[in-house]
Structures are given as C-alpha cells and as structure tokens.
Image 1: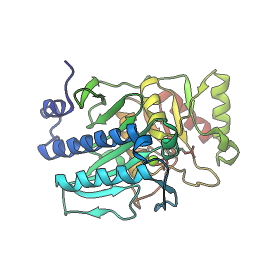
Image 2: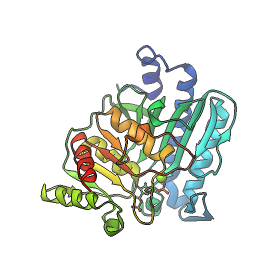
Image 3: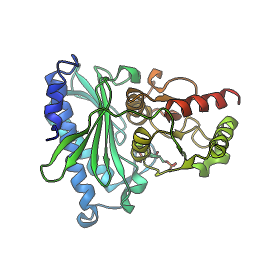
Image 4: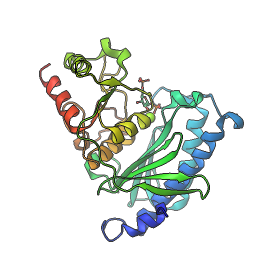
Length: 311
Ligand code: AHM
Ligand code: MG
C-alpha cells in the first residue's frame, strides 16, 4: 500500500529537522488546495469556467477564469491555515503580509494559462521560504508543483531529494508513487519555443540548438512550464526559456516559476542556470522579477553554457 502524503511528511521528520508541524500543516493545506483545483480543472468545460475572466493581471497578461479560481482557492486555504506569514502570487501585485515571521509562500496558481481551454496539462507551482520571500532560491525550505495531466501528480522537495505523489481518485489521497526522482545525466529531448529563434539575444543559443539537432535530439514543447519541466525531470534533456528581444530577461518569473523548478531539478541531480549564474543564487530584487531559464540534465546544461560563453 503506497504511503499517503501526510504520513510521508511525518515519516520524514527525523531525517529533515526543519520539517516541523507548522510546515507539515502548510504543505497539507497546499495539497488540499491543489486537489480542489484538480477537481475544477477536470470539470471546467461543464462548470462554465473556461475562457478569459476579462481582466489583465499585474504582468499585463490576460487572466483566465481558472487562473482566478485557482488563485482564490490557494489564498483562502493559506490564509485559513494560519501558517503563512507572507503570500505572493503571480496574480497579485503586492505581497500579502499576514504576520511578521513564519513561512512565506510564493505560487503560480495555474501555470500554462494558454493551454487551459484546450485540455492540455497545466499546473500549480509553489516555493516556501522562511520569514522573507525576497531570498535566493537556495534558501528555499521546500518547493514543488502539481501537474494536472492524465494523472494529477504532486512533486516535492524538502531539500533532500525529490519525491512524487499521484492523486488516487478513489481515496482522494496523494500517494507516494516515486520515492526518489533522479534526473538522467543526459537525455534526448530539448524544449524551447523555437518560433522565437530569430528574436533570441544570444547567437550561442542558436548554435547550441543546431548542435542538438546534429546530435539527433528531438523537440518537445508543451508551452506549460510545469509539463515541460515534469518531462525533463523524468526523461532528462533540457528546457530553456531564454531572453529575447521582446522579453529581455526572459518570460518566466523568478520567485514562483524559475526558482522552485531550479530547486527541484538540482535536488534531482540536474542543473539550472540563467546563463550567467545558477538560478538558485539569484537574490530577488522585486516580487515579479523575470529571469532567463536553462535547466535539465547536467550534460546538456553544461554544454549550453559552453556555447553561450563562446558567443
Ligand atoms: P503563465 O504563468 O501565464 O501560464 O505563463 C508562463 C508560461 C509557462 O508555463 C511556459 O513555459 C511559457 O509561459 C510559454 O510561453 P510561450 O508561449 O512564450 O512559449
Ligand atoms: Mg506561470
């Protein structure tokens, strides 16, 4: 019988000293919220919650009804559990300060918005720090994501490896399905929006992608970071969202996209870089800061950095 999420957390207390009851409660609350979101995602076409909410968020992007709903569910759960001192969301301009000290949570409530209406995998990403959200990614206490795909899966790191849980629709529990996720050292897939090729600011990147083609790599790009990183985590290879002429610091946000994914990738034995430094070393200057993202198997990320440095 597979171990349920809460039991897993209690079993890990001895091995992970920072895993206290407050953190367990917080993680449980996030898991509960994502189960609710998974239910809404599954029935979205029947509930009339597909499509645009008719608003634009702080990033200037169109908000989808499900973005809004997922955001409300997470906020409600986090406020009610009383263990989050600061809450940051992609959908809210300012950080919500609840109390002075404790755990901070930053999240992207529904990543992959452009895929919502067409029944393609989307997800929730979260990152937990202590006391202040404006800390480097290497100081994360925990990070994870939930992918709403053919199965709903929660992938978590508490700073000692990566474990994955699959939502059992019968019991409604996240059950431990992958106790130790390890990223292959080298893969066969690259993942990048190649339509932007002419806009990429680095010539070295174009040469790197050409090199991968010569090496007979194949391309997979969902356009949901959660899905593209999930595949990379399990199959290896490389995922890139680079800087381009339009997005000069890339598109993905440091606090609730790049940083938690970098934490998971490194905890599974991979590498994550902005092209200049490890993503986990970047100290945020502002809440919705963007960074270029290069992550995946060590071999490909190192090779990519080599091409970039010979720009
Ligand atoms: P979102 O948080 O509004 O959904 O935007 C982030 C998404 C990522 O999931 C994905 O990697 C990227 O945007 C895709 O962007 P593009 O369509 O430019 O390739
Ligand atoms: Mg996102």
